[in-house]
Image (cartoon, rainbow, N blue to C red; front, side):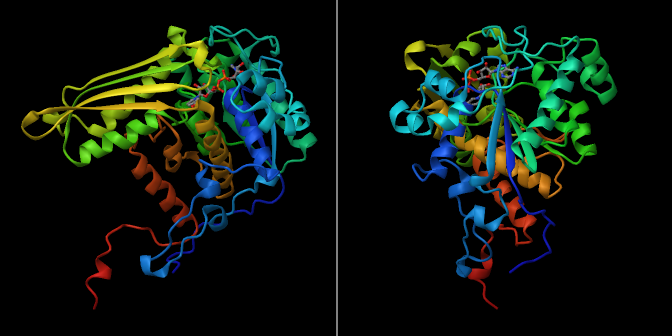
Length: 442
Ligand SMILES: NC(=O)c1ccc[n+]([C@@H]2O[C@H](COP(=O)([O-])OP(=O)(O)OC[C@H]3O[C@@H](n4cnc5c(N)ncnc54)[C@H](O)[C@@H]3O)[C@@H](O)[C@H]2O)c1
Protein backbone atom coordinates (compact mmCIF):
# COMPACT_ATOMS: atom_id res chain seq x y z
CA UNK A 1 0.00 0.00 0.00
CA UNK A 2 1.42 3.39 -0.98
CA UNK A 3 1.70 5.67 2.05
CA UNK A 4 2.62 8.91 0.38
CA UNK A 5 2.84 10.39 -3.06
CA UNK A 6 6.50 9.63 -3.59
CA UNK A 7 8.80 11.80 -5.58
CA UNK A 8 8.09 13.18 -8.99
CA UNK A 9 10.73 11.46 -11.14
CA UNK A 10 11.34 12.43 -14.74
CA UNK A 11 11.18 9.36 -17.00
CA UNK A 12 14.40 7.76 -18.27
CA UNK A 13 13.72 8.88 -21.82
CA UNK A 14 16.42 8.77 -24.48
CA UNK A 15 20.01 7.66 -24.17
CA UNK A 16 22.20 7.95 -21.09
CA UNK A 17 25.81 8.93 -21.73
CA UNK A 18 28.27 7.37 -19.31
CA UNK A 19 31.54 9.29 -19.32
CA UNK A 20 34.29 7.44 -17.48
CA UNK A 21 37.40 9.11 -16.24
CA UNK A 22 40.07 6.48 -16.85
CA UNK A 23 39.89 3.64 -19.36
CA UNK A 24 41.78 1.01 -17.39
CA UNK A 25 40.88 -2.33 -15.84
CA UNK A 26 37.67 -1.29 -14.09
CA UNK A 27 36.25 0.82 -16.93
CA UNK A 28 36.93 -1.70 -19.67
CA UNK A 29 35.56 -4.58 -17.58
CA UNK A 30 32.44 -2.52 -16.98
CA UNK A 31 31.93 -1.48 -20.61
CA UNK A 32 32.70 -4.92 -22.03
CA UNK A 33 30.42 -6.47 -19.43
CA UNK A 34 27.46 -4.25 -20.26
CA UNK A 35 27.89 -4.91 -23.98
CA UNK A 36 28.15 -8.66 -23.36
CA UNK A 37 24.97 -8.58 -21.27
CA UNK A 38 23.22 -6.53 -23.95
CA UNK A 39 24.09 -9.18 -26.51
CA UNK A 40 22.65 -11.85 -24.26
CA UNK A 41 26.02 -13.52 -23.73
CA UNK A 42 26.46 -12.93 -20.02
CA UNK A 43 24.73 -12.06 -16.79
CA UNK A 44 25.20 -8.84 -14.75
CA UNK A 45 26.16 -10.70 -11.59
CA UNK A 46 27.02 -8.42 -8.68
CA UNK A 47 24.72 -5.64 -9.83
CA UNK A 48 21.97 -4.86 -7.32
CA UNK A 49 20.19 -2.63 -9.82
CA UNK A 50 19.94 -5.48 -12.36
CA UNK A 51 19.52 -8.57 -10.19
CA UNK A 52 18.20 -7.31 -6.86
CA UNK A 53 14.61 -7.33 -5.66
CA UNK A 54 12.94 -5.10 -3.11
CA UNK A 55 10.31 -6.16 -0.63
CA UNK A 56 7.30 -3.84 -0.48
CA UNK A 57 4.68 -3.74 2.25
CA UNK A 58 4.02 -6.56 4.71
CA UNK A 59 5.67 -9.95 4.44
CA UNK A 60 2.22 -11.43 3.86
CA UNK A 61 1.70 -9.26 0.76
CA UNK A 62 4.40 -11.12 -1.14
CA UNK A 63 5.38 -8.11 -3.23
CA UNK A 64 9.04 -8.23 -4.21
CA UNK A 65 9.59 -6.69 -7.62
CA UNK A 66 12.99 -6.41 -9.21
CA UNK A 67 14.54 -3.05 -8.40
CA UNK A 68 14.89 -2.19 -12.08
CA UNK A 69 11.16 -2.78 -12.51
CA UNK A 70 10.25 -0.84 -9.38
CA UNK A 71 12.17 2.40 -10.04
CA UNK A 72 12.51 4.03 -13.45
CA UNK A 73 16.15 3.25 -14.24
CA UNK A 74 17.82 3.69 -17.60
CA UNK A 75 17.81 0.47 -19.59
CA UNK A 76 21.17 -1.10 -20.41
CA UNK A 77 20.40 -0.80 -24.12
CA UNK A 78 20.29 2.99 -23.72
CA UNK A 79 23.81 3.38 -22.29
CA UNK A 80 26.46 5.04 -24.47
CA UNK A 81 30.08 5.14 -23.30
CA UNK A 82 33.09 7.32 -23.63
CA UNK A 83 36.19 7.91 -21.50
CA UNK A 84 39.23 10.06 -20.91
CA UNK A 85 42.68 8.55 -20.40
CA UNK A 86 46.25 9.80 -20.73
CA UNK A 87 47.12 6.42 -22.26
CA UNK A 88 45.84 6.44 -25.87
CA UNK A 89 44.76 2.75 -26.03
CA UNK A 90 41.22 2.14 -27.25
CA UNK A 91 38.92 0.09 -24.99
CA UNK A 92 39.80 -3.19 -26.72
CA UNK A 93 43.57 -2.72 -26.36
CA UNK A 94 43.17 -1.46 -22.80
CA UNK A 95 41.01 -4.46 -21.88
CA UNK A 96 43.52 -6.90 -23.39
CA UNK A 97 46.33 -5.23 -21.45
CA UNK A 98 44.31 -5.22 -18.23
CA UNK A 99 43.95 -8.98 -18.62
CA UNK A 100 40.72 -9.25 -16.64
CA UNK A 101 38.29 -10.70 -19.17
CA UNK A 102 39.08 -13.71 -21.29
CA UNK A 103 40.21 -12.46 -24.65
CA UNK A 104 38.58 -15.17 -26.73
CA UNK A 105 35.39 -15.65 -24.77
CA UNK A 106 34.59 -12.05 -23.91
CA UNK A 107 36.68 -9.54 -25.85
CA UNK A 108 36.97 -10.88 -29.41
CA UNK A 109 33.18 -11.13 -29.92
CA UNK A 110 32.81 -7.40 -29.15
CA UNK A 111 36.15 -6.23 -30.55
CA UNK A 112 34.65 -3.73 -33.03
CA UNK A 113 32.49 -2.20 -30.36
CA UNK A 114 35.40 -1.82 -27.96
CA UNK A 115 37.75 -0.48 -30.61
CA UNK A 116 35.21 2.25 -31.28
CA UNK A 117 35.79 3.67 -27.79
CA UNK A 118 38.91 5.78 -27.98
CA UNK A 119 39.91 7.85 -24.98
CA UNK A 120 39.62 11.61 -25.08
CA UNK A 121 42.81 13.43 -24.05
CA UNK A 122 42.97 13.58 -20.26
CA UNK A 123 43.49 16.41 -17.81
CA UNK A 124 46.50 14.67 -16.35
CA UNK A 125 49.54 15.69 -14.34
CA UNK A 126 52.13 13.18 -13.25
CA UNK A 127 52.65 15.09 -10.03
CA UNK A 128 49.38 13.52 -8.80
CA UNK A 129 49.97 9.95 -10.08
CA UNK A 130 53.69 9.40 -9.91
CA UNK A 131 53.88 5.97 -11.50
CA UNK A 132 52.06 6.86 -14.72
CA UNK A 133 53.18 8.54 -17.88
CA UNK A 134 50.67 9.68 -20.42
CA UNK A 135 50.85 11.06 -23.93
CA UNK A 136 47.15 11.57 -24.55
CA UNK A 137 46.88 14.72 -22.46
CA UNK A 138 45.30 18.13 -22.76
CA UNK A 139 47.42 21.24 -22.96
CA UNK A 140 46.30 24.46 -21.38
CA UNK A 141 47.87 27.52 -19.82
CA UNK A 142 46.09 27.02 -16.52
CA UNK A 143 44.02 24.40 -14.73
CA UNK A 144 41.00 26.57 -15.43
CA UNK A 145 41.65 26.18 -19.14
CA UNK A 146 41.83 22.42 -18.73
CA UNK A 147 38.52 22.45 -16.90
CA UNK A 148 36.98 24.45 -19.76
CA UNK A 149 38.29 21.87 -22.24
CA UNK A 150 36.65 19.11 -20.19
CA UNK A 151 33.39 21.04 -20.29
CA UNK A 152 33.68 21.26 -24.05
CA UNK A 153 34.21 17.46 -24.19
CA UNK A 154 30.98 16.93 -22.28
CA UNK A 155 29.03 19.29 -24.53
CA UNK A 156 30.35 17.72 -27.69
CA UNK A 157 29.71 14.18 -26.40
CA UNK A 158 26.11 15.16 -25.70
CA UNK A 159 25.74 16.26 -29.29
CA UNK A 160 27.67 13.61 -31.18
CA UNK A 161 26.39 10.66 -29.15
CA UNK A 162 22.83 12.00 -29.15
CA UNK A 163 22.39 11.39 -25.44
CA UNK A 164 19.71 13.13 -23.43
CA UNK A 165 21.50 12.77 -20.06
CA UNK A 166 25.07 12.23 -18.89
CA UNK A 167 26.71 10.85 -15.73
CA UNK A 168 30.42 10.81 -14.94
CA UNK A 169 32.10 8.11 -12.86
CA UNK A 170 35.74 8.49 -11.84
CA UNK A 171 37.42 5.14 -12.56
CA UNK A 172 40.89 6.62 -12.89
CA UNK A 173 43.96 6.20 -10.76
CA UNK A 174 44.35 7.08 -7.12
CA UNK A 175 45.98 10.48 -6.78
CA UNK A 176 48.44 11.59 -4.12
CA UNK A 177 47.03 12.44 -0.70
CA UNK A 178 45.57 15.94 -0.44
CA UNK A 179 43.99 17.45 2.66
CA UNK A 180 41.21 20.03 2.37
CA UNK A 181 42.58 23.57 2.53
CA UNK A 182 41.43 27.18 2.08
CA UNK A 183 41.13 26.90 -1.73
CA UNK A 184 38.55 24.12 -1.31
CA UNK A 185 36.21 26.10 0.91
CA UNK A 186 34.30 28.26 -1.58
CA UNK A 187 33.66 28.26 -5.29
CA UNK A 188 35.34 31.67 -5.68
CA UNK A 189 38.51 30.44 -3.96
CA UNK A 190 38.42 27.22 -6.00
CA UNK A 191 38.07 29.05 -9.32
CA UNK A 192 40.84 31.46 -8.42
CA UNK A 193 43.08 28.55 -7.45
CA UNK A 194 42.42 26.90 -10.84
CA UNK A 195 43.52 30.09 -12.54
CA UNK A 196 46.65 30.24 -10.41
CA UNK A 197 47.50 26.56 -10.97
CA UNK A 198 47.40 25.88 -7.26
CA UNK A 199 48.79 22.39 -6.46
CA UNK A 200 45.82 21.79 -4.11
CA UNK A 201 43.61 21.49 -7.20
CA UNK A 202 44.06 17.92 -8.46
CA UNK A 203 43.00 16.81 -11.95
CA UNK A 204 40.09 14.84 -10.47
CA UNK A 205 38.67 18.12 -9.13
CA UNK A 206 38.76 19.61 -12.63
CA UNK A 207 36.60 16.77 -13.95
CA UNK A 208 34.18 17.15 -11.05
CA UNK A 209 33.96 20.90 -11.56
CA UNK A 210 33.43 20.46 -15.31
CA UNK A 211 30.71 17.87 -14.65
CA UNK A 212 28.79 20.11 -12.27
CA UNK A 213 29.08 23.14 -14.54
CA UNK A 214 27.58 21.02 -17.33
CA UNK A 215 24.74 19.71 -15.12
CA UNK A 216 26.20 16.24 -14.87
CA UNK A 217 26.20 14.09 -11.69
CA UNK A 218 29.63 12.96 -10.54
CA UNK A 219 30.54 9.77 -8.64
CA UNK A 220 34.07 9.18 -7.38
CA UNK A 221 35.31 5.59 -7.40
CA UNK A 222 38.76 6.36 -6.03
CA UNK A 223 39.73 7.63 -2.58
CA UNK A 224 40.83 11.02 -3.96
CA UNK A 225 39.48 14.13 -2.23
CA UNK A 226 37.80 15.31 -5.48
CA UNK A 227 34.17 16.24 -4.65
CA UNK A 228 34.59 15.86 -0.91
CA UNK A 229 35.18 19.59 -0.49
CA UNK A 230 32.75 22.38 0.43
CA UNK A 231 33.32 24.33 -2.81
CA UNK A 232 32.06 21.50 -5.01
CA UNK A 233 29.42 20.32 -2.55
CA UNK A 234 27.85 23.78 -2.55
CA UNK A 235 28.07 23.93 -6.31
CA UNK A 236 26.26 20.57 -6.54
CA UNK A 237 23.54 21.72 -4.16
CA UNK A 238 23.10 25.02 -5.94
CA UNK A 239 22.79 23.34 -9.31
CA UNK A 240 20.60 20.52 -7.95
CA UNK A 241 23.06 17.80 -8.90
CA UNK A 242 23.92 14.56 -7.14
CA UNK A 243 27.52 13.84 -6.15
CA UNK A 244 29.16 11.09 -4.14
CA UNK A 245 32.19 9.04 -3.28
CA UNK A 246 34.67 7.89 -2.28
CA UNK A 247 36.36 4.68 -3.38
CA UNK A 248 34.41 1.65 -4.63
CA UNK A 249 33.80 -0.80 -1.80
CA UNK A 250 34.71 -4.11 -3.41
CA UNK A 251 36.82 -6.85 -1.79
CA UNK A 252 38.59 -6.60 1.51
CA UNK A 253 36.69 -3.58 2.81
CA UNK A 254 33.37 -5.12 1.87
CA UNK A 255 34.27 -8.13 4.00
CA UNK A 256 35.42 -5.85 6.81
CA UNK A 257 32.12 -3.98 6.83
CA UNK A 258 30.28 -7.30 7.11
CA UNK A 259 32.43 -8.89 9.80
CA UNK A 260 33.03 -5.91 12.10
CA UNK A 261 29.27 -5.26 12.60
CA UNK A 262 28.87 -8.96 13.48
CA UNK A 263 31.50 -8.71 16.22
CA UNK A 264 29.90 -5.58 17.55
CA UNK A 265 26.40 -7.05 17.40
CA UNK A 266 27.58 -9.95 19.63
CA UNK A 267 29.73 -7.69 21.86
CA UNK A 268 32.90 -9.58 20.98
CA UNK A 269 36.11 -7.62 21.51
CA UNK A 270 38.74 -6.82 18.90
CA UNK A 271 42.44 -6.65 19.64
CA UNK A 272 43.80 -6.28 16.13
CA UNK A 273 43.09 -6.53 12.43
CA UNK A 274 45.92 -6.99 10.02
CA UNK A 275 44.97 -6.67 6.35
CA UNK A 276 47.37 -7.20 3.53
CA UNK A 277 46.89 -7.36 -0.22
CA UNK A 278 48.94 -8.50 -3.14
CA UNK A 279 47.96 -7.34 -6.59
CA UNK A 280 49.74 -6.83 -9.83
CA UNK A 281 47.59 -4.65 -12.05
CA UNK A 282 48.24 -1.01 -12.96
CA UNK A 283 46.24 0.09 -9.93
CA UNK A 284 48.65 -1.94 -7.78
CA UNK A 285 51.58 -0.25 -9.49
CA UNK A 286 50.13 3.22 -8.87
CA UNK A 287 49.45 2.33 -5.24
CA UNK A 288 53.07 1.23 -4.88
CA UNK A 289 53.88 4.93 -4.73
CA UNK A 290 53.73 5.93 -1.05
CA UNK A 291 51.79 9.15 -1.77
CA UNK A 292 49.00 7.38 -3.65
CA UNK A 293 49.03 4.57 -1.09
CA UNK A 294 48.49 7.11 1.68
CA UNK A 295 45.22 8.20 0.00
CA UNK A 296 44.08 4.56 -0.21
CA UNK A 297 45.23 3.76 3.32
CA UNK A 298 43.15 6.56 4.83
CA UNK A 299 40.13 5.30 2.95
CA UNK A 300 40.62 1.69 4.09
CA UNK A 301 41.45 2.49 7.70
CA UNK A 302 38.41 4.59 8.55
CA UNK A 303 35.81 1.83 8.52
CA UNK A 304 36.58 0.02 11.78
CA UNK A 305 36.66 3.12 13.93
CA UNK A 306 33.19 4.19 12.81
CA UNK A 307 31.63 0.74 13.00
CA UNK A 308 33.05 -0.25 16.38
CA UNK A 309 32.59 3.07 18.20
CA UNK A 310 35.55 2.70 20.63
CA UNK A 311 34.29 5.73 22.59
CA UNK A 312 31.15 3.83 23.52
CA UNK A 313 32.85 0.46 24.03
CA UNK A 314 36.36 1.19 25.33
CA UNK A 315 36.68 -2.22 26.92
CA UNK A 316 35.98 -4.00 23.63
CA UNK A 317 37.38 -1.66 21.01
CA UNK A 318 39.48 0.93 22.84
CA UNK A 319 42.79 -0.59 21.85
CA UNK A 320 42.51 -2.01 18.34
CA UNK A 321 45.67 -2.39 16.29
CA UNK A 322 44.56 -1.90 12.68
CA UNK A 323 47.04 -2.20 9.85
CA UNK A 324 46.47 -2.17 6.08
CA UNK A 325 49.12 -2.99 3.49
CA UNK A 326 48.98 -3.18 -0.29
CA UNK A 327 51.89 -4.82 -2.04
CA UNK A 328 52.48 -4.62 -5.77
CA UNK A 329 53.14 -8.14 -6.99
CA UNK A 330 52.98 -8.35 -10.81
CA UNK A 331 52.40 -12.12 -11.25
CA UNK A 332 48.89 -11.79 -9.79
CA UNK A 333 47.67 -9.16 -12.24
CA UNK A 334 44.08 -8.14 -11.43
CA UNK A 335 43.56 -11.29 -9.35
CA UNK A 336 44.18 -9.80 -5.97
CA UNK A 337 44.66 -11.75 -2.80
CA UNK A 338 43.35 -9.93 0.23
CA UNK A 339 44.39 -11.60 3.45
CA UNK A 340 43.08 -10.66 6.87
CA UNK A 341 44.17 -11.84 10.28
CA UNK A 342 41.65 -10.83 12.91
CA UNK A 343 42.32 -11.17 16.64
CA UNK A 344 39.09 -11.11 18.58
CA UNK A 345 38.30 -11.91 22.21
CA UNK A 346 35.25 -13.30 23.98
CA UNK A 347 33.87 -14.30 27.39
CA UNK A 348 36.29 -13.33 30.18
CA UNK A 349 38.71 -12.02 27.55
CA UNK A 350 39.73 -15.35 25.95
CA UNK A 351 41.42 -14.72 22.56
CA UNK A 352 40.33 -16.21 19.24
CA UNK A 353 41.44 -15.71 15.64
CA UNK A 354 39.71 -15.48 12.30
CA UNK A 355 41.54 -15.62 8.95
CA UNK A 356 40.01 -14.41 5.73
CA UNK A 357 41.76 -15.16 2.48
CA UNK A 358 39.84 -13.55 -0.34
CA UNK A 359 41.12 -14.61 -3.74
CA UNK A 360 39.18 -12.05 -5.65
CA UNK A 361 39.22 -10.32 -8.99
CA UNK A 362 39.32 -6.63 -8.40
CA UNK A 363 37.65 -5.39 -11.53
CA UNK A 364 35.06 -8.18 -11.60
CA UNK A 365 33.88 -6.85 -8.23
CA UNK A 366 34.12 -3.19 -9.27
CA UNK A 367 32.37 -3.33 -12.67
CA UNK A 368 28.81 -3.92 -11.34
CA UNK A 369 29.35 -1.10 -8.86
CA UNK A 370 30.15 1.29 -11.72
CA UNK A 371 26.96 0.20 -13.45
CA UNK A 372 24.78 0.68 -10.38
CA UNK A 373 26.32 4.07 -9.61
CA UNK A 374 25.79 5.29 -13.17
CA UNK A 375 22.13 4.20 -13.08
CA UNK A 376 21.36 5.42 -9.56
CA UNK A 377 23.07 8.78 -10.04
CA UNK A 378 21.04 9.28 -13.18
CA UNK A 379 17.90 8.33 -11.22
CA UNK A 380 18.91 10.75 -8.45
CA UNK A 381 19.22 13.60 -10.92
CA UNK A 382 15.83 12.85 -12.44
CA UNK A 383 14.36 12.75 -8.93
CA UNK A 384 16.01 16.12 -8.16
CA UNK A 385 18.11 14.74 -5.32
CA UNK A 386 21.01 17.10 -4.94
CA UNK A 387 24.35 17.19 -3.14
CA UNK A 388 25.83 14.18 -1.36
CA UNK A 389 23.88 10.96 -1.99
CA UNK A 390 24.33 9.24 1.33
CA UNK A 391 21.89 6.49 0.34
CA UNK A 392 24.55 5.26 -2.09
CA UNK A 393 27.11 4.76 0.72
CA UNK A 394 26.55 1.06 0.06
CA UNK A 395 28.99 1.34 -2.84
CA UNK A 396 31.80 3.29 -1.17
CA UNK A 397 34.65 2.48 1.19
CA UNK A 398 34.74 5.98 2.54
CA UNK A 399 31.26 7.44 2.06
CA UNK A 400 30.82 11.18 1.92
CA UNK A 401 28.36 12.62 4.41
CA UNK A 402 26.92 16.00 5.30
CA UNK A 403 29.17 18.03 7.62
CA UNK A 404 28.80 16.88 11.24
CA UNK A 405 27.50 13.41 10.36
CA UNK A 406 29.61 10.30 10.75
CA UNK A 407 29.56 7.90 7.81
CA UNK A 408 27.58 4.69 8.03
CA UNK A 409 29.89 1.81 7.06
CA UNK A 410 27.90 -1.30 8.03
CA UNK A 411 27.01 -2.92 4.69
CA UNK A 412 23.56 -3.99 5.85
CA UNK A 413 22.63 -0.61 7.30
CA UNK A 414 23.78 0.85 3.99
CA UNK A 415 21.64 -1.65 2.09
CA UNK A 416 18.61 -0.81 4.23
CA UNK A 417 19.21 2.89 3.67
CA UNK A 418 19.44 2.35 -0.09
CA UNK A 419 16.28 0.28 -0.31
CA UNK A 420 14.33 2.57 2.01
CA UNK A 421 15.34 5.50 -0.16
CA UNK A 422 13.96 3.70 -3.21
CA UNK A 423 10.73 2.98 -1.29
CA UNK A 424 10.53 6.62 -0.24
CA UNK A 425 11.11 7.81 -3.80
CA UNK A 426 8.24 5.65 -5.01
CA UNK A 427 5.87 6.45 -2.13
CA UNK A 428 6.05 3.00 -0.53
CA UNK A 429 6.05 2.28 3.21
CA UNK A 430 9.44 2.14 4.97
CA UNK A 431 10.36 -1.30 6.27
CA UNK A 432 11.20 -1.09 9.97
CA UNK A 433 11.41 -4.85 10.68
CA UNK A 434 9.31 -4.34 13.80
CA UNK A 435 6.83 -7.02 12.73
CA UNK A 436 4.73 -6.96 15.93
CA UNK A 437 1.57 -6.73 13.86
CA UNK A 438 1.99 -10.35 12.75
CA UNK A 439 1.71 -11.46 16.41
CA UNK A 440 -0.53 -8.93 18.17
CA UNK A 441 -3.65 -9.04 16.07
CA UNK A 442 -6.52 -6.78 17.10
N1 LIG B 1 39.02 -2.61 -8.76
C1 LIG B 1 38.64 -2.39 -7.56
O1 LIG B 1 38.22 -3.29 -6.88
C2 LIG B 1 38.68 -1.00 -7.01
C3 LIG B 1 38.12 -0.77 -5.78
C4 LIG B 1 38.11 0.51 -5.26
C5 LIG B 1 38.67 1.53 -5.98
N2 LIG B 1 39.26 1.29 -7.17
C6 LIG B 1 39.87 2.41 -7.85
O2 LIG B 1 39.38 2.53 -9.15
C7 LIG B 1 40.36 3.15 -9.94
C8 LIG B 1 40.54 2.37 -11.21
O3 LIG B 1 41.09 1.09 -10.96
P1 LIG B 1 41.69 0.25 -12.17
O4 LIG B 1 42.04 -1.08 -11.63
O5 LIG B 1 40.81 0.37 -13.35
O6 LIG B 1 43.05 1.04 -12.46
P2 LIG B 1 43.83 1.18 -13.84
O7 LIG B 1 45.19 1.67 -13.50
O8 LIG B 1 43.70 -0.05 -14.66
O9 LIG B 1 43.02 2.30 -14.61
C9 LIG B 1 43.05 3.64 -14.23
C10 LIG B 1 43.21 4.47 -15.49
O10 LIG B 1 43.11 5.84 -15.11
C11 LIG B 1 43.95 6.58 -15.97
N3 LIG B 1 44.16 7.90 -15.40
C12 LIG B 1 45.00 8.30 -14.42
N4 LIG B 1 44.89 9.60 -14.20
C13 LIG B 1 43.94 10.07 -15.04
C14 LIG B 1 43.39 11.35 -15.30
N5 LIG B 1 43.79 12.41 -14.63
N6 LIG B 1 42.44 11.46 -16.25
C15 LIG B 1 42.01 10.35 -16.94
N7 LIG B 1 42.51 9.13 -16.73
C16 LIG B 1 43.46 8.99 -15.82
C17 LIG B 1 45.18 5.70 -16.08
O11 LIG B 1 45.96 6.02 -17.20
C18 LIG B 1 44.58 4.31 -16.14
O12 LIG B 1 44.41 3.86 -17.46
C19 LIG B 1 41.62 3.23 -9.07
O13 LIG B 1 41.73 4.51 -8.51
C20 LIG B 1 41.35 2.24 -8.01
O14 LIG B 1 42.04 2.52 -6.80
C21 LIG B 1 39.26 0.04 -7.71
